[in-house]
Image 1: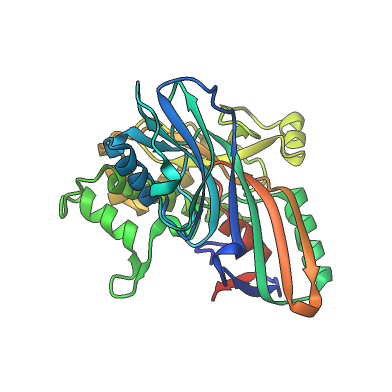
Image 2: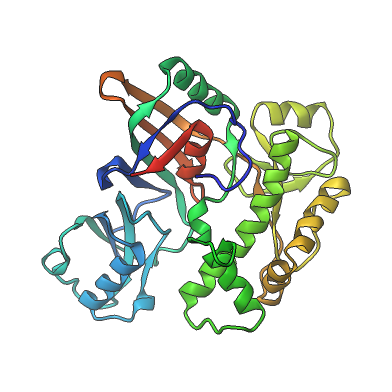
Length: 346
């Protein structure tokens, strides 16, 4: 479920996702392959219904190394079948028989050495294969919506999983609540992983509100005076006055308007865009000030996400749809589903 304003408000498509782990498959697209030599053992692992960080802990135990010596590029869904790389620092040591000591649901697909560890975010992207069951809606609407998403992209929201579960008694999401309590000094957070989770949640919360405001105004995929633009497929940003060239490059999806990822420093946006971003920083002052106090710097994120290779297979008699697509690193499949229709987990 999308927590924020959707473009496709009138979709009649619905169904059930994640009926079983194999209904949600994710495969990493690595930007490069390990060289075959070095002190780091790189492992390509297929895991079923397993948490990424937990698997990293198992590898550390098997290798008899500190947990910090095991790295991966990004977290993957637990309730899914996922393929991803891990690296284990083992200088001057033979690698153990990993598979013999790993539990069921974790399979070693490939093993190679490399001279560097695998760092967070060093991915080209992820390939998704999803199954939607009990699908309701016409194939014509599905085809039309898929075409629209492929041509125009979607709002580049952070997925709802970033914010944790909803706490009814507090009227907020768990990770946002914990971030506020941490920033206010009400709780201590010793775990580096938990600190990262709360910082990311706080940043994502402010960004999603900025984006949702643009979606409601119909300007999330348009150039507005004061915008900072990002090149498609890059994190390179620049500010420029609007002219015919900017408008055409936006239309061709070569450029995307951006929103603030909050931190210390001056906003690069100007005019009304600058004012609007400051409005949400003030609205969530505990979060924005906390991010600054923790040393995060101002960054930008594209408001529009281009979904590549989006296609489907319709099985009307079985009321089943198979979807496949690829996304750049840091993008969420749940954001694609939110624009496609209304889907729930079984």
